[in-house]
Length: 545
Image (cartoon, rainbow, N blue to C red; front, side):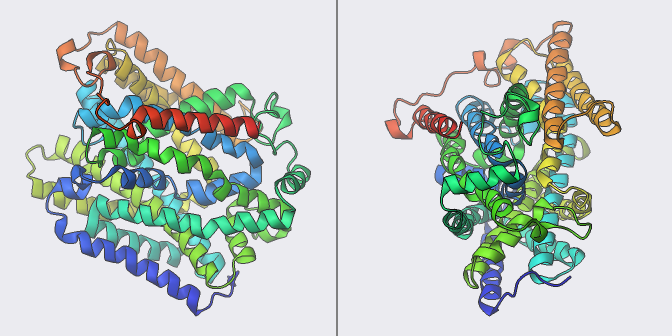
């Protein structure tokens, strides 16, 4: 394939410097990876501002960058729901209410918390399902890298996947979670520097915000507002109405991801103390609120201002995943193009690294140590964590080829979340706030909730259930999955014996002492950060109603 752009020496040099830098971080940290705790959990010693940026950057992979730009082009301003409804509320909730349980219980992972609160079988099911989800999601990032290399440099998909896999493998193998976190912070700033010019230049070309929205309305009718067009499925391109949006995305998928996905929770658990752990997702809310203007608006600019032929694949169909790479070539000159391309590559490699570090931790602690070698020494756990990193990368390569079949990787990711995160959130919600919930109820609710998602997907794919769009199908699949898990967990728990109260102290809200914050300066308290984030989010919802 002919490369889309002519990249000069400066662009290649910037990309090379980035690769050298990320590998250098891993090399520099390698001597401090003495124990499994150092390699898999960063020793719980990282400041809140770093874990906060890593918390948001762990979500700045293919989902956030290429996926959100693609969805911006496909659904317009409706995509902002993934931020101002589908992220901020849940991030506040996990910071205020859930981190005291995660961090205070000293659990090393989300599955380990489930073992402490419920039992071994619930932990085992979640560990296995989460391990599967992480490598599938990692493959999405690997696929996205390959698409960018192919379009920009003319490299083959297969060679690009191999190169990205090797780089990520090396810096995680050397520096573990700490290497991943510091690279995520670097990636955050690269994305802002690399993509913000596209928004500014595109708005200038369109004649400002009103000019851009007017053009978007002609291309994708019903896509220029957040709320005013979702009274009916026929009035917006996402084919969703307010109940599906609020319940499916705003509650089930959002809380299911941000509150239970170990990929992001792991960053907060690496913080130096409980207050820092609580503040980690709260600090992350503020850049998260502004990120639609960096990742969604470029997609709107691309579909509104450029000819659609620029985004078509070999079959003559629009491939929304191509929009962001095309925009880089359109708006960024050489030199600046190198920064934009590096930011794109950084985001995808970070997405890969985040999933792989979560995978190696869950496998090492919740599968290998729990069931395969219960007497493993710490050095054996450290070696297993490194070996699992290699295995995770290899499996991710295979899952990258699954992503090839999706024209919008955001649709694929939400499908994964509806299977794995939606029923898990029901389990967590009841486990943390209802002490009567039992291990039997949690396990069967989680298992049958996941099965309900599978049944819905089969019915939707076979045509027995129809939706206006794949995204609408994902939202309702999440609702059915969560509802099944929630109801069955309650019913089965009422028929089985709960744990005694003394075994649930620190694991259930009503039995856990509340964290004291009166010794913390007012502006650093979790409650202050939470109120500020919610107030700003409300303002944005009103402005773009």
